[in-house]
Image (cartoon, rainbow, N blue to C red):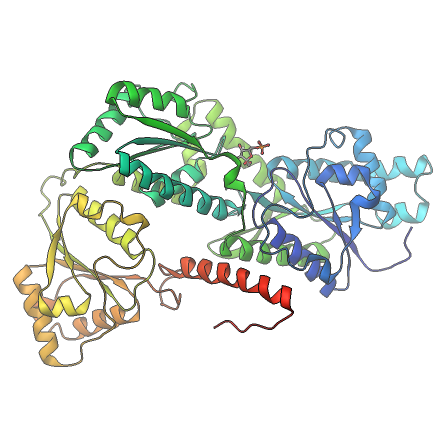
Amino acid sequence: MTNDKRMSLAVFTSGGDAQGMNAAVRAVVRTAVNRNANIYAIYEGYEGMVQGGEYIRPMTWSSVGGILQQGGTQIGTARSPEFRTRDGRRRAAKNLLELGIDRLVVIGGDGSLTGANIFRQEWPELVQELLEQGEIDENTAVSHPQLMLVGLVGSIDNDMFGTDMTIGADSALHRIIEAVDAIASTAASHQRSFVIEVMGRNCGYLALMSGVATGANWVFLPENPPPTDNWREEMCERLRTGRKIGRRQNIVIVAEGARDRHGEPITGEDIRQILSEELGEDTRVTILGHVQRGGSPSAFDRNLGTMLGYAATHKLLDTTPEEEPQLVGIKQNKITYSDLMTCVRQTQQVADEIAAHNYGEAMRLRGRSFVEMNDILDTLVRAHRGQRPLGQRKLRLGIMHAGGPAPGMNTAVRVATRLCLDHGHNLYAINNGVKGLMRNNVTKLHWMSVSSWVMLAGAELGTARYVPQTTAEYDQIAATLQSRKLDGLLIIGGGDGYELAYQMHQRRDQHPAFQLPIVCLPASINNNLPGSEYSIGADTALNTIVSYVDKIKQSAVATQRCFIVE
Ligand code: F6P
């Protein structure tokens, strides 16, 4: 029994591991140390809590050094049948009380968070029982009448209410995208079809987002099964059309829990058979499995884990026994606190709706951005243009870059092209940025002009760091717009693009050609553009930096040298 009057808290990871859990543990430990609290790590999740002893270890600032860049969870996770029993939980309570711990940071999925809440509800009875049986003394029982909890969601599935992103989902998406890009090149070489199964039993986040990010040709999600029983024919027709217009690879992504509208599972093998038989295609299946949970966390997950771990520790140290347990998450890039059990219940409701075949409701519960992303995917998987709505004029739109190249610019051009064509309009590429705009260097974009652009770095249309200064230069720009009869302009780029748009707008009285709608899409690795929290390219640049710094650190640690990275 400890006489230490400082608060004592413990952190543990539970359920499936996820990249970024280490960042969260590190932040919890260091924030607690900074607040002069006693901080323990419980190794092997609930199992370690039940076993006690060396499984519950005091942590110091340096205990969590060098773990930020590691995958998985350094403090382990395990399934614990014993913790599911009341006796197991009683032993766990005793182990915590012996160290004066009555505050927990739980990092896990909905199952782990539910387990923690049951434990919290039982805690007063468990304390009483331990006292009656002489396993703890009166003072301990009186000092720790309640268990206080804060939950962080560590799961690659991104399936939890109360946070826009779960710790690990972004890294898993990176793993999937790397794998699909690699598969796409071999698929294209042989003109083969590949079916790739990704994780997600009740949540299609990874399938949906990787489908968009890799330019997949068909995607199956648990929440949104194909709308009709004709899905086999429709999928084959779509893929056949793609081949006819020159696509060399077919990529189908299927979530682990995909099903049809009747709830019958759709597996990678089912799809392989259909494609082989109906299309006569050489089709292969790749199940990505636990590769998705492996490897070093992305910059986003390291930062998410760090931010949430920091916020959770402050929350836990400031909470009172009366307050309901909170889930610490992010919504629209801000840290948020939500009632933990409400979030768990809402999460479980999605699984219930899927099981009851209420797919519309399951999609609604997933939220607006999930539904929007699904609509974008629906457009992008078409192999050719759709129909212009009746009565709408066919528009001639221009697209160009400005400023330095940023990763993701090509993806944006691809989406813009397909969306324009899908709505029956024409899109013209202005090559080499503003220089092409002055020199009338313009080409028409077709559906297949942007095929495979999702995975291309740089800027295929070309770009330039230049903002025209003179009247003569603006005369040239006006001449291009007039000769091409453009009805609107999309500028994807950095501050130079904003400046160009502004200058054209200012000069619209002298140049009627500038009286057209201009839209700027922020693209800059610096992430410093107004009007958006993220600019295209910033996340990729950050990941590049982080992966190089990881390597430099290895050398720095080995040689005890100091490196300055610019
Ligand atoms: O919840 C995370 C997750 O990776 C799911 O996507 C997947 O269905 C499941 O865990 C796999 O669990 P296990 O690692 O126990 O096989």
